[in-house]
Image 1: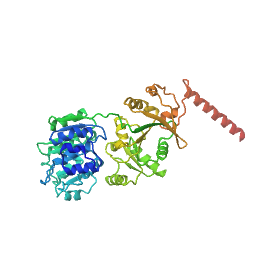
Image 2: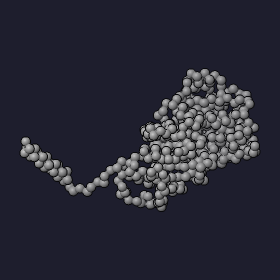
Image 3: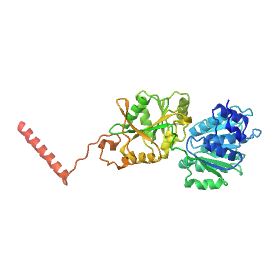
Image 4: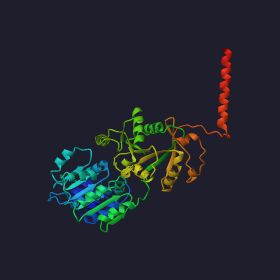
Amino acid sequence: MMESNFTRFEIKDFIIKSIQEQGFTMPTEIQERLIPAIRGGKDVIGQSQTGSGKTLAFLIPIIDRIDESKDEVQAVITAPTRELASQIYDELQLLLKYDEDRIATRLLVGGTDRLRTIDRLKSVPHIVVGTPGRINDMVDEQALQLHTATMLVVDEADQMLDMGFISDVDKTASRMAEQLQMLVFSATIPEKLQPFLKKYMNQPRHVHVKPKNATAPTIEHRLIPLRHRDKIELTVQIATLVNPYLALLFTNTKEQADELTGAMASAGLNVEAIHGGLLPRQRKQVMKQVKDGKIQYVVATDLAARGLDIKGVSHVINFAIPKDLDFYVHRVGRTARAGEDGIAITIYDEQDHASIEKLMKRGIDFSFSDVKKGEWVELEKPRLGSLTRTKKTTSSSQAGHGVARAKPKKVKPGYKKKARWEQEKVARRERRLNRKKK
């Protein structure tokens, strides 16, 4: 087995063994810059895009610092969604595969049996992973004690803020040890997050890893014009044509996700939806089916774009361009992981031209294609800036989300009165004809 560069961090042997088995030999930039700081007990802010390896950047040093001889909670890892918390927990279990001293862990998320969770917490975990709401519930139930915990991870902090969970994280932090090491990870650091950071962090090491490319260079970005077609029908055609190993389809709303999932299922495609509107039990079942390779298509909303880390995604299909263009990067980042190739297909309408121009300015190289008679047809690529300069007088059917509309005719003043008079004239003529027949 190839020697791992992770040995330079002087971490426990069982962690090195687990890392090697997963095929990791070289630390990523964020791991290189943060693992020593976290092992040294420093507060850190890790700012990076999806796929940078930040989960291992905090899990590795946390595991290394756990004292197995103490039966007490020592680290708390919070995430904004159940799915993301579950994925972090799964990564944690992989790293603990060869741990002979048995570091105890517990996953605390909503949608699980409350009484069973309380019962399991009678065996005190060293590391707790979960959503802040459920973690606080367990403290309120006096099933969990956090005053001994000295390490707190706030993952996807900007999403925590957007979803209104920062107050829950604040409550969790206030229940932990006074000498608290806080590890914050986020794609962006909004101004509204600053009061929370200043409250708990002491001269944090701030590492901002800028991506070399807006997206992975192995992703092919393909744009498909909507024109006069029905968007759902076109999406089903595209999904069928690509016949992926596993495809993620992103919509902007839960309603769109449900409608698209229904249409794909009616077309005989193996599809499931995952979004905040599903019951916890349903979401858990979908994720299990995905992991077991039983689903070919998953329809998701943007909330899931930051919370899903599904391996083997060959295609990403954007039913609609997101309003926040950063989410385009998060969406397509689900494919082409670990150096693999991936294809990102986006359906666009005339109203999306400005967004496309902005993405092109970020360095995303789009190809323009269409689907005709079940085959791909390559279209001429417009120059940068030409889309938004185009006059919006192309076929009116493009402007209405696939609904064909007649071009409005020029009318003169008083046309309504004249039209009504013409109608009355026709009606009078018909009445006269009827009288004559009688």
